Amino acid sequence: MPNSFVYEIWGNDLNNVWAIAGSDFDKTIYHYDGISWKTDGIYKSLDPSSLFVFAVNNSFG
Image 1 (cartoon, rainbow, N blue to C red):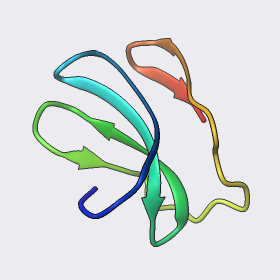
Image 2 (tube, rainbow, N blue to C red):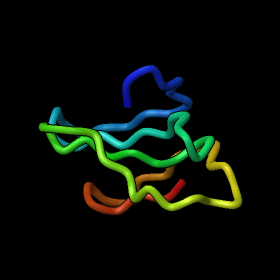
Image 3 (cartoon, rainbow, N blue to C red):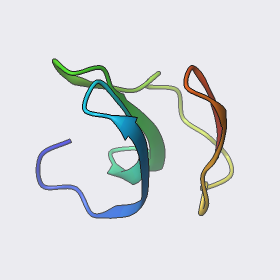
């Protein structure tokens, strides 16, 4: 997620962090697993603007 503006971020430890940030797809949801940031890379017709985390492995933006 280098050079991206982070809009929202949540994490319960250093190995489980969720964020909404800018990307080539405008805004997308990222997950950090303690090693690297990943996204699904799928263009979304709606830009997420908030982040809801229901459990450590389940989020919705």
